[in-house]
Length: 393
Image (tube, rainbow, N blue to C red; front, side):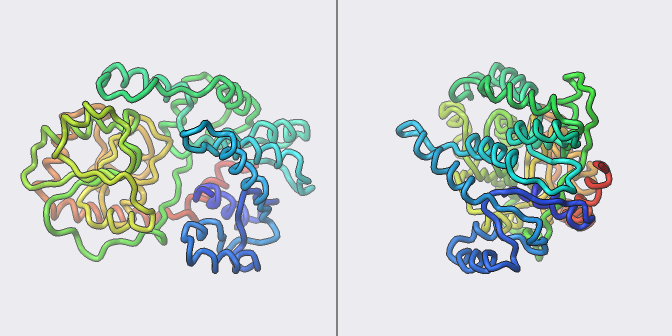
């Protein structure tokens, strides 16, 4: 259950505008299910994400059987030797279930997420209700174009065929967008991906709230070697080839580059940079805060993101970020004040920024303090209030 969906629901509940919040496995902290879940979370910490504190239990509808059934179906239907992909079955099943549930008579609008809105929007349209479509990533045409361009530019780094959505998902997404009366996005980059389509629908930009309770600020700046951290999937869309090349050219003495997350680039390409970075394929989310705190700088040279939650997570820890305008960077960072924004695909600019940060770690620490201060000014409470105001229905 994504933090942004809970943040939106909490905001509407706070403003007494929430008829109901329909999700998968979830429970209100004060309910008996929440207490049982809290006990189970001692052994499986991930369950804490499914227990909602300060949420009205009477407005929460948990479709546990739908989520569990969809996950089981994905497991059974997977190809031998391939990992189970539950995303599609989860969203389609959830949408179908919500579309046939009894809706409160007070419902004036529905708020649904890309891939999980089609049947729900069709029912809402028949009832004359407003329909808000949340698009968490740039439109798929923008992402597909990005993969084509980068695949040509970094042909020796490509793994597998170019990324593309299956035709049935494209039809579904376009139908959802066609039914929407408003669109909610978290960054101007995502909004721009829609404006390219020439759509006549209002698009509200509301940056996500900083998770200040989940990621605490560090007690002191890091000591030891100058360390740059990059967290997430490392592939063409995330700009990883540009980071690896920039780090090689920067040649900062006694500095370390740490990559955390799957590395999805061809091995011969990665081997060209062997020895210049350290890689951890997976780190538990509970350990990420310590990783951010131990780094001087987070590098996130994305070429196309809906937002980039790692930007906020690092800033909450007092670790400044260097990123591009192709995501949530402009919504979170004032260049040179609480982080840095460099042009996308500009290796020279990235080299210059890396060297400047390594040469003045005190300045980097000061920018990190400003990053934490900015995070405290825009938590999910402020973000939620702004979203409700923009999407007044």
